[in-house]
Amino acid sequence: MLSIRNPKGLGVPYPCPLSKPKAALRVMPEADSPDNSEAYSLDAMARSKLAALEARALLRQPVETARDGVWVERGGRRLLSFSCNDYLDLSRHPAVKQAAVEATQRYGAGAGASRLVTGNHPLYAALEAKLAALKGTAAAMVFGSGYLANVGIISTLAGANDAVFVDELAHNCILTGAAASGGAVHAFRHNDVEHLAALLTAERSKHRHALIATDGVFSMDGDLAPLPDLAALAADHGAWLLADDAHGVGVVGGGRGSSFAFTPHPDVPLQMGTLSKAVGVYGGYLCASQPVIDLLKSRAASFVYSTGLPPATVAAASAALDIIANDSVTVAKPLAKAKLFTNALGLAPAQSAIVPVVLGDTKKALAAAALLEAEGFLVAAIRPPTVPQNSARLRVTFSAAHDDADILRLADLINTRVLVS
Ligand SMILES: Cc1ncc(COP(=O)(O)O)c(C=O)c1O
Image (tube, rainbow, N blue to C red; front, side):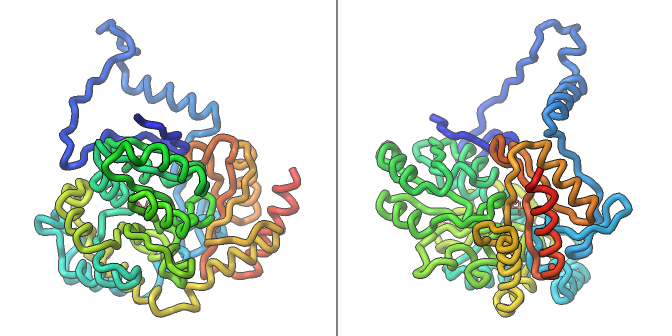
């Protein structure tokens, strides 16, 4: 049933949507001798997996990094970061910080319970109204994170008799939500409308409902999904379309996100996104019709069974959305700066604030990131399984706060020291 290639398979949790009882999980030891302590050892298992990851240059470890806008301090050195999704620098905006402080003073540091119990503090209504207005939908709901949003939305709207069609490069949380739905999952080649059309023609009639899910702006590639074509296919095949606008809102479509980057705007009934990137805070959301939002508030497990966001987070996101809605000059900057970079390197013009410099080999990407770090720049090397095999890359992200001269200096370094080797 599962026909998905999962290029970002960091481990898909077992589904637990409200409507589908969880089957018992059986864990089988790899050896059956009860006194074979090494075979049963948790630490031995972890050590052996760590060694295998290290051998393939795939071990990951968070590195302590103090962030102050586009400047960071790491290992005692100050670096200029091109590795952050705070595209508008709103996490540091005085009005955003002030809103967080005031909400904490008034309501305390935590929500105390899930939103359906007592965690639905008065700040949510304003935030959800602003989200719905920005996206032009009848309603909106806020989740604990973008990841939780996709898992909850997809696994609630699609079930065992349904099919989910996903772009092969869609974010891991879309794939996790699709797997958690219990339905058939079909991956279509990246942005390949003809492949999706062929899959829909072959598979759609076998299922009650069908959902097409894609990133609106692809998180590791920075390109836009062809939403008008996807919307037309959804209409032709009686499918629903979800666009994950984590990297679109605040940056493309005048800040309203990827659906608004096209004229006329395609009909995307499920506009999901996060408050953690250009909005500069934390949390996830869905903008949709009133019945869809009402259904998800009752049935999406990641909403029902998870504590509400801290009041400061909701208030800060609300203040940040006001800036996105009103400050078109700042909103235009990350894309303009990304285009300055792609132009300097002779790459295709950036479509968002994310530009990949694909190097292929994992060790080459790590060496390039180390070289740039030695020169005072922080640029993340992205490796499989976050990106497909043999497509390790530098992921360069742009902020309204970057200086053009620094962008050109980085482009020159990449041109003369990275792309030549
Ligand atoms: C496309 C996309 N969707 C969803 C998420 C998850 O959002 P959050 O960080 O709010 O959980 C991310 C985060 O990296 C993302 O890039």
